[in-house]
Length: 105
Length: 533
Image 1 (cartoon, chains in turn purple, red):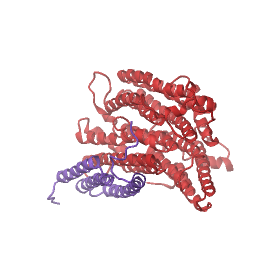
Image 2 (cartoon, rainbow over the protein chains, first blue to last red):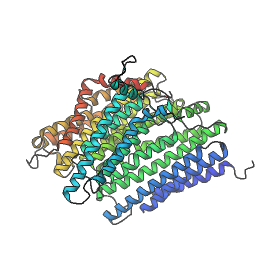
Image 3 (cartoon, rainbow over the protein chains, first blue to last red):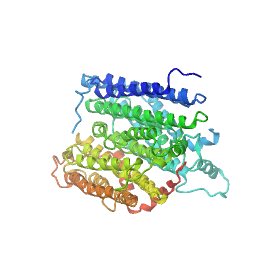
Image 4 (cartoon, one colour):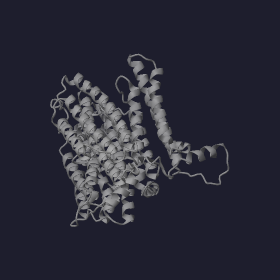
């Protein structure tokens, strides 16, 4: 089987996506933006897993199984996260992470 | 392969799942209206159902574990012994179920601790009134407990990930349950930090998977920890991919157990969450996190354990653990000193306690198997004692917070004159956290110090001793507020029976374990036999 794209290239894309997601999660002030950053991080993991599976052990299904679990859990997490952002909006009237700061010290 | 005989081995988890669904369903059969009377009835019904259910499951697990009484092989066969025999057939020991879930003694002791913690927490909530739909509140506690039990026995990467999420997602909701300003802020902070940390952990897992797939050359597949350890041993110490994946896994789980520098969320969450939920998060979820960290490091990466001896070449995960323990002890104890909020002070205190637990992992710096086993025992013992003690402390604060309406240190002023039994119970918990003999906390601290010293990390033990002395200052501040300061009003503090019983049970446990440490140590001694080691 000839491969036009080497495994390293795919891994670099995943690592870049992970870093973009991490940067987004840390730097965005909007809570929904933070959530989007986290989703990017999770998707970079999926790319990693699928790439490792396809290039290194295509005869087994461990990689895709893992990916399906990650996608499912990410959906559950997003549902809980968005519900919590709605709660924040109801009690604080804002979804800016900087203004939600009653607990500190 | 999963066999039908494996079902009794996961009986506690199955029972917990059934109970959680029952609690959720029971709400439908209650009077469905929003008057105060019917709401109270619904709260009572779900709280009592989950407390009684968790108590029963605890007893069943205790019988199944065979720690109190093991049925002899030649016992006569009758109705009772048949039930007992079938139950204990699923007891500790035997292999790992489908390579992903171990039911060894470590899992069994963890189940008892975690289900016990959930039992005490739901007892604390007997008179604590959650918002609109009470059944959800109790069901979420039980769902989270299932996740923790699975986490304690997980030996495979997918299983660890799923169990971590199953533990955390209900806890995010519980922390933000009240929906007011403080609670919702605690919830969202917990959620964002938790989701980010699990993404980091997952990235580490994907690297470990890729590493194993590469090493096996596509001829077989491996993502359980035992096989990972064999591959890691072949690869040797200098493998950067494996080290990176290990560091990311440690970082991801480090968030769950709130060790410095991954502790940023915990004081805010502990302060803002409802106090019984804080008791649960700070004990059970931390204990489960430590157990999975222990299993991950000792089963998958024993070849990378390295050394934590001063002056020697540092490397491997014991030096990471020693470094984390150092930071955790210093930051946790120093940051607790100026706190005015009692919940926040105890939050920093539980960060500091995590530093002591890490000493049990540092014991793996020693090459001798005996020292490593002692480290395991010290770690589990500390976790059991810490769980009991912290539930007592936060439970006491929950009672005061409900009666007085605040949880600052000055709200505790003169508690001894307003409710002497409560003040005494709270004082015993706090003294045990500080490590005063003859309470359980003293022996637990002594044991981890001894283990740390033997493994060669004496510099860490000295620092731990110094920070223990520093910590006395803020623990004694709580005592001074309760016993010496003048009360704001002489009105007695009302302590509901359910909450008082929960605090009483945990303090009784602390006293009994403190005076007769061998009772629990005899059982914990068995954890040396961890599956896959």
